[in-house]
Amino acid sequence: MSVYDYKVKNIEGQEISLSKYEGKVLLIVNVASKCGFTSQYEGLEKLFQDYKDEEFMILGFPSNQFGSQEPGSNKEIQEFCRLTYGVDFDMFAKVDVNGENEIPLYTYLKKEASGIFGTTGIKWNFTKFLIDSKGKVIERYGSSTKPSEIEPEIKKLLGK
Image 1 (cartoon, rainbow, N blue to C red):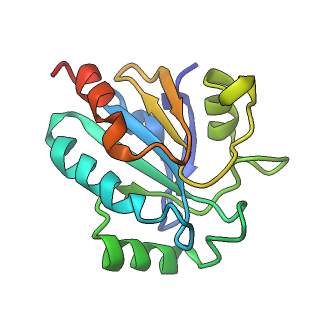
Image 2: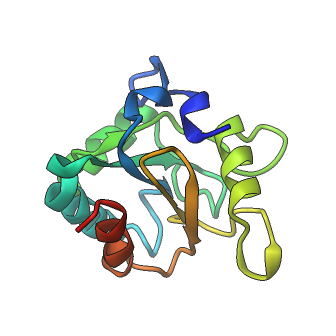
């Protein structure tokens, strides 16, 4: 199994296979528009702009599971991200990342890379999973890890 085996809905509601990202280094992030970490959109977009031409992509998955900090519709989320942070990386439909309604992709990610002290549940918005170009989960980063702190590992995976 790899991330390429999963299908998800993009922010417009169309089902897509993550196999379309095969061969790319990915950073998968659960995001929210009204969170103390929301300003990380800026750092995520900078990473994306710096490496998008080198087989790198960020996948943003809005979730309202943490403090109800993503209350908007998919359309409202998309507009907020584009207008406020100029987000150009791929965004997906709002999802659950924990619990009985969590999407299978997140079940897989959490199984492959546990959190601190071996916990599996996502603790908060802006938890990040780094995926290599073969679809293997390399690392999980907590909310407080800034996108710029992940850049050295991204560069290494890109052969830089």
